[in-house]
Length: 225
Image (cartoon, rainbow, N blue to C red; front, side):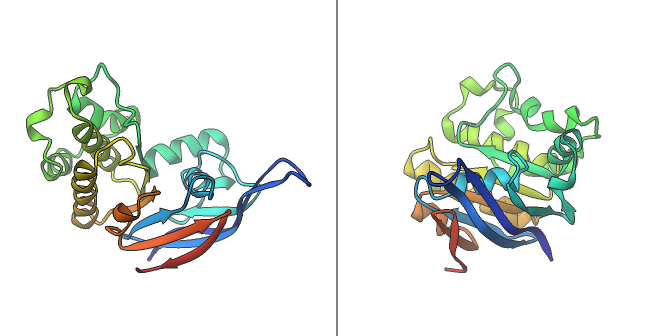
């Protein structure tokens, strides 16, 4: 089952003769439960694509379908709600709330949406990510790898349709990066969670189920490697 799809996605900046084609007619499908890495050099369009997939920026043309919904047919307020309920984000800089402890950070998106916490599920996520002993810690008392695991748990806790990871190992050393991505892959399989990750790190990308390569705003490869 396809959970995420883009159709002829275009994002252009400026005008001729100085036009920049950040995304140039990008079509992509991601199946439910798949772990996809989008790889490209700086300026290739991978970050722009991730922002489009998450509804953080609107394209010039084309559409993005998430869990059967054309997200850019939604008004801004509707899109904000949809994004909070259906899309989990993992950022390079973790984006944890410093005055909240680990557990409070993990369940914050659920509470903001006024939903009931599925405690059994959240406990499973916490246990899988090896955070059970850290729940009362504040973020500044954690290592970078631990903070990123909290960010992963937060992204998974609301059971989103997809999780988008933006260079999630960019601030981590090589060994910690491997550990974090290994845990991310474990959680994606255990909870049948769809993950799309952008990275410039070829070694990290190899841990995904499939690698999508993008150059100059065009997808040049989207096969299992």
